[in-house]
Image (tube, helix red, strand yellow):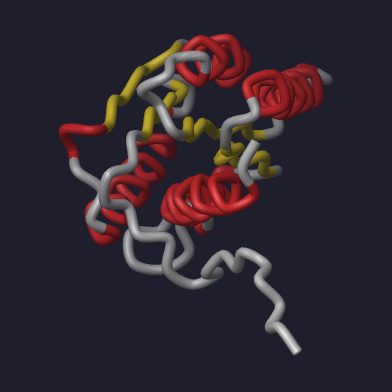
Length: 161
């Protein structure tokens, strides 16, 4: 009996060597997004992803992430795009509009380009919650976004066109 020849993607590793990554970062709530970016870059470095094969683009806010991500993902030399931002609830409905618009836009960029476009945007009720999700040594959603991007590059490559 012939063994199953399915392509298997390693859920743990996702090494970064040879992969090209763009990171789009929201300047709004920069005191948090800088922490996310640091975690993201640290994880990419740890994975062996070359700093020469990455680019960081700053945009005004989370609402501007999707159009920038789409433009980057359409470039042939970019394997994945990571979007980092922090939307912290205020006293108005604005939080919901920005959070939903950013999430929908990032998802649409991924579906349109069939490339990994990772949603590394914190949507928290408080600044304290945002700090807890962007810790230097502990929980850092920027670090998780980097791992997700690398894993998705491998997953989509394994599936093929």
